[in-house]
Length: 95
Image (cartoon, rainbow, N blue to C red; front, side):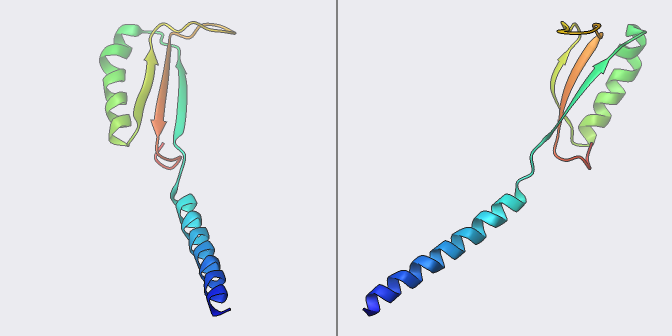
């Protein structure tokens, strides 16, 4: 009979410990933020030489990563923009 109580008590202790660990893991996990930008460039030369290098350096310095960049996107609906960029950020605060 004493063995039975020991087994039941250890099962409850293991369940409580497992629930605590799972709760702490869920609290730590934060999904990434995906930022999609449609850019309509009026002056491609100035954009490529002046704006783009500075903007890319600022984004990388702040912790953003470029997932995709397409200078000639194909629209499914609406008018075509001249560029589309997808960035990945760790949190909304960083963006």
